Length: 255
Image 1 (cartoon, helix red, strand yellow):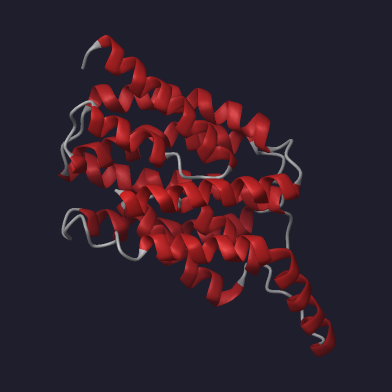
Image 2 (cartoon, rainbow, N blue to C red):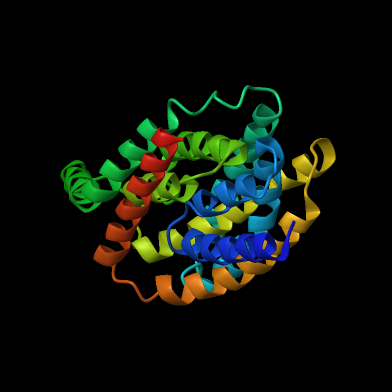
């Protein structure tokens, strides 16, 4: 890797760490850069997964105030995420690389619709609960667990726009603010990427120079993303999620 290529990977890591903390989809920055500097697709994917973990951790630390009171929720959803991430990592080394390409843009598009409609849907669901005299499940219930498992399988497999899927599911099925859900998303992303990376270290070839450059950049980017993301009002954060999600769809379709 030449000095210019190393600088490009480092810069992509900073950008990915920042955008992952605010929304997700940082892989859409790092993965093409790793391919451009000559890494094979699977090596780029597994190196990227490990390199982005420190950024998810610093992003989660930056959101520690929003995580207060969510320990039980985190344990439950984190367990689901770990199982899904491990499953996705196994699928990456056993399935052809095209396996998810057809369905992923559709999933992201559906997630964006949910993000846009989430306030209206949440009000409708709350009104129905009031009529029936029922309370919202504190942890989202079986539907959220199933959705988060499938999103985590995808996260362990590739992960582009993984955060958008998480935010749409939790935003719809959890009775909480978008910023608190975003903090939870950062921890779950760290767990899923982490378990996938541990598996990849054992069974796949890593480019350790790329891992180190992305990790350094993503660590800084995670801190920046937390400072920016926590200041965004819900409407602005929702709009940014939609913009990033549309960019993800375009890149995946044209790939």
